[in-house]
Image (tube, rainbow, N blue to C red):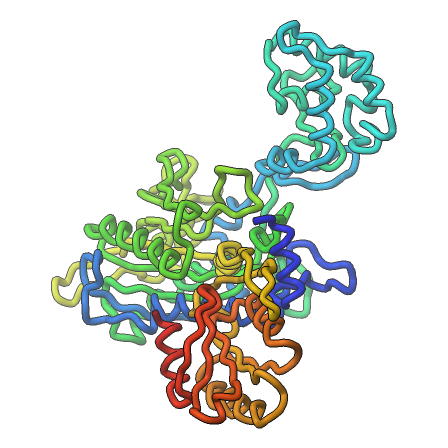
Length: 565
């Protein structure tokens, strides 16, 4: 599936729009249209229903070490600044950024080479080198390459800042010498040499994906959005838009214990907006600056935490599979030891092979992390010093905690054993936007189906799971006469309080089917001449194209059963 086709369909059918599009758009921000808002809401409601409100507190689910309770929160987007200092976000929540000395654009350092593969000039360089480079002789046809570099249709137009274009004699000589030393024809290595002017330093400069110019050395860039609380704009009133929803749960841990009868093990769930000032938002809604998270912080006894980690890892993977992300495009990947945070004893990512990624690569949908007691301890005592000893609280020049915790007792006391401890936390953290995008990518397909005249035509279908589909059923009168519209409208009105249903009487019925296929509607109900006689209608299945006759009085139960199956 080509990503361009999905993006086009999303705008055409009203799933997603660029934010502020009439003013040229705002990079990293997206608006959900009439169908998109229903789809995303269904994703969030399915998650909340399956994980929280529909959870059976009294039984042990398959794979669970014990029975457990679930509850929810809805915390504010802006919190006390000390929250982010104790959590580590104030100091450590940063990406490495590079900027181009020529075109001045910014790039996330770990994305540069991925972006390079997509650029026209990089592909042109690769082709030019291939035709002018002899790997066995370790030689470059300098004259031909220099001609390409100076040619406005070649190098100057495609990559005006590339060192090869600006100073072909110097960079060709440098390239020739470097190739002789390296005995290699790796494209990234060649590009690094081509973009290097200053040979006095031992490091090689990376080319800019935009213009081929020289990128600066990577430097830290904090991803939190700053804002001001109050009338005065000064440092004391500075606050931040939350970069994650988890910290609101941790700081309310004691409030939940005191206001409810929950006992460990239990989970607190939250769905809400988060904000990260991404350096280079890209790949449609996959990496945005404003996004929505679906997170659970599951509190358990330290002795059983590993079992709970495995339980939540497997359960969350199964949830995606049950809703249609089955097959090789969905994987569960355990982090290697060198990937783990200092406080984590286990982290797994649920990843999906999005079509905009290179073949064989996967993008993260959800992370399930064993966070130990790090978060509650940090908010109780202060941010830990992970650079020296993760068990030592950072001190200032006066010997006092540098990032003071709340000082509140966030331990848990077991009423039966009287044991007191800081619970360990398992965190399944999912992105609502990424999940929605994955379901869209998985659902998109093209096949052949007969039109109204029996001729085969290409049919675009969004095969969304019925639980997620924005519209559950569409009601049609076969023609706009003979009493059919009246019966169809009565059916529509009867179903509307129960399901998201649409009514359509415009155009040939085959075209109406096609419109609903693109919208992902799983069932189409058609009222025809026989409906006026025997009180039955035709229900057409979106995926199988099977048509069955159902009594009008049974339509509601029939649709309900098909959605849940």
